[in-house]
Image (cartoon, rainbow, N blue to C red; front, side, top):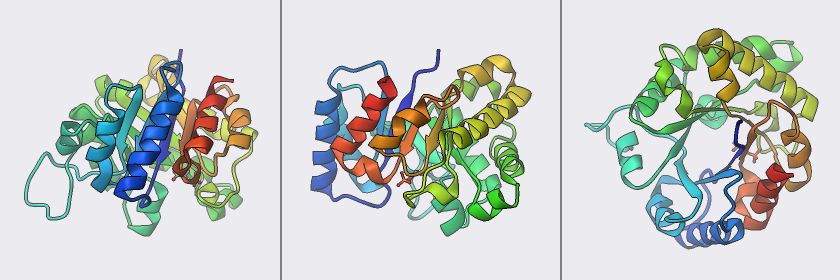
Length: 252
Ligand code: PEP
C-alpha cells in the first residue's frame, strides 16, 4: 500500500549546467516508470532550471530547506510559498547537517514542518542518532525526542503529506550504511511512535525512507525490509547512473 520514494539530496553540489544535465539524465532514465516515486532536490539556485527539465515527467522536484513564513522581512531566506510557486512538491527538513552544523533545534524544525504541511508541501522530515548516542544505547530515546519535538501540534489531516527519513548520522556521507536489520529496527520503532501519536492507519500509510550511504549495491537489501519505504540519497544521487540503479532496486 505504500509506494517507495527515492529522493536525491544534491546538497550544495552542482552548477547550473550540471544540475540541468543530471536532471535530464534522471528524467530520461526513469521514462514513464510510475511504480516508484522519484524526486530530485537541487540547491535553491537551480530549482527553477531543474523544474523546467522535470516538467511533464514523473520526476518530482524538492527543496532542501525553507523558512517557516509565507513572506516577509527575512533577508536571505526562501519561503514554502515560493518553492511551490516554482513547482516544488517536496522539501527536506531537519537534515542532520542542518541540525548539527547549523544548529537547528527540534522546535525550529517543528515550526517549519507545521508551516510547510499547512501550505501543502510534502515534507521529508529527517531524524537519526549520532554514533555516540547509538553506542550509549540511546537510539530509541533520541528518535522519540526528535519525533515528539519535530511533530508537536501536527494537524492530523496533514499527515498524508509527511514522509520520515531515518538517517543515522554516523552513516551519512561516511560510506558506512546501517545494516538492513538496524534499519528495520529503527523504522519499526518510528512507525510505532507514529501509531501511538496518530493511530494505526496513519502509521501504516506513512512512508519511512532510509538514508545514509545508500548505494546501488546495498539499496535492494535495505529496501527489502518491511518498514523501509525507499531511500534519501546524498552522494550517489549526483551520478544519474548510480541514482537510477537505486531507483531500480526499489522495484526489485
Ligand atoms: C543525505 O544527504 O541525506 C545522505 C543520506 O547522504 P549520503 O547518501 O551521501 O550518505
